[in-house]
Length: 143
Image 1 (cartoon, rainbow, N blue to C red):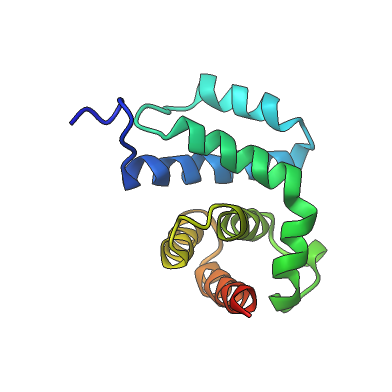
Image 2 (cartoon, helix red, strand yellow):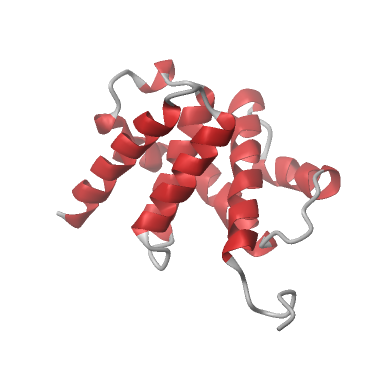
């Protein structure tokens, strides 16, 4: 089956999260418009094999809803939101968006992907922090 015609693989979603994280980080750093950052990524990054619709949904969704997302995960962080590492904050925003707005994605997949992003982009033990916070977010959403 040709993956460019309708079917979306987990690898395509993984690449979308990978680029979305970078775009969200850039947005946090610069405050540039999400659409401009997304356009730049589509022009400058090796996006072949990426679920572009999901990439757009993640970037736009996080930027549009970041205040709500922050309210959902910030009670479970051990420090104030302003003191969080920007990569950790971007990962938590991205994953919390998926947990909240893309509930067709199993929460275990969302958390695992967030851990993998933390291992790739964040400080050495950030994946443990991200896992702990997201686990509490999931438990709070089930109540």
